[in-house]
Length: 250
Image (tube, rainbow, N blue to C red; front, side, top):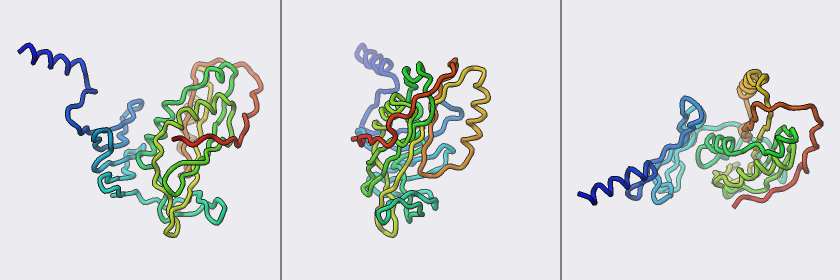
């Protein structure tokens, strides 16, 4: 009896992280907003994706169903948009026969990036705000390469974005054009903004209006906002080395 009570105590102390057996059902959702959005559903076996996994966008619509046992795409939401593909030694905006996509929930990936980036203290102290834009290429093997800083308000903001971006899982489904896997270019835009209390309501209304505008399918955008910051007028420093290449995540 004492041993049974001891085991029960261990289970209670371990909490929800304790998993018995090898298989674990997993649902990932955005807990920062209401109602919660379920981004993915599937089973992990010994830390690996197994069986059928389903992935959803911000609106809760199914975008991808993967069968990890057979390594096949069971369903992919139709996509007739134009993407930037590398054809004939040049980047061209064309409609691929199979659109490139993240092997998972791209909406969750973007949300994770946005939640993980912190406004650099040095940038706050110097009043630095603006947009970090990083381009990268998804190659024929579904891996990312050729990361490049297109524009940035400061070195500190670039480093804050890169520290998070390089930690993201590097798994993509490459574009197919005329029967051949083809490189595709993507952009990540991260807007750093400092907003005082008096401006907060107007800023949020403006952002909401901007986010309703159509956006190219190869662009992901997140916002990093510091609220309650009192600013003084000053000249912001020039962007640090636009076009600087970054290392590919491993």
